[in-house]
Length: 387
Image 1 (spheres, one colour):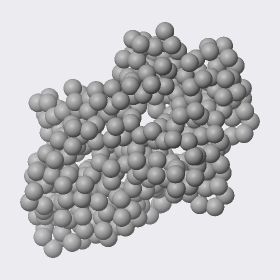
Image 2 (cartoon, rainbow, N blue to C red):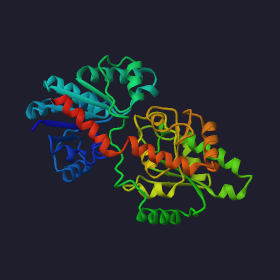
Image 3 (tube, rainbow, N blue to C red):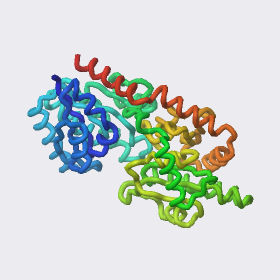
Image 4 (cartoon, one colour):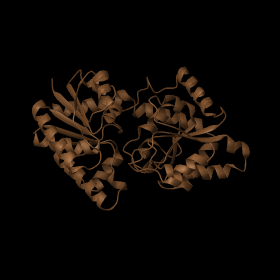
């Protein structure tokens, strides 16, 4: 049985992207998961029934710690002698591909789920580009999560190696046995709205993700403020339109401006919840998703919303524009544009074919991003690489 090591910088990435997949793969391969310490790594070991190994890695640049992690990975790969190392997330990719090349691992595969440097500037951008060039130089195979990511890699000449996008993109797929509005989920959604004080006839816009600047939160709040000002001429429409933000704030990495935080607290009809383990009642409680991110690889949240027949308003960025077709299953607006976003939210609020748009979103996800299809594409790719 051939041996594959799957590695990410922090274990929550493997826990999210590879849930159920590692157990499925373990019937054909010996699978080992490697990541930094954390409860999520213990969850992976128990749920996927595979071996896990701790190697501390840090998301930010930390030269001394990075060299220690690199040495630990080299020793690990020499000891385990895997047939393939498959990395995901930037730092794990750089360290794992470098270590795997030095340890002479025959198949070295990295999946790019998103790129940081397209929205970075100055020396930071140059450093990030150099890191990705080194990563690709050490990898034998490169798997961008979507066409947009592949286009950016080619445009910046990160590598001249072939870039393989599997299927229509995405690395996780949607499990429709889990993501569907069952009667129980609908009851939970109703209870959630009641708990928050959102009436059943209120139109609820939803954002799900990290509450940080590069998710477009500032533009979203400013757009909702403009929308509210527009609707204030009609007291009923104003009171029957709300925005729910679901996710955790990050105070160290890309925090929100103080002005945005203040608007979230003071504007009427804005509700906020922390990251939730079970997000399904949130989708079932909403009428539309708003996802104005600056950069993505292939946003799962837009796929999950589609599984609940929610149309989405997204920005014209990688991943999002590969899921949403303007006017069919949602609306697309330019990034960083609160005026266009407010206009799209107003149109969605009163769009007569919104439900049909939501059904189109569901059908699109079912046809192209159902989990069995995504997993099948990956398993065929593994067989090709390891044959």
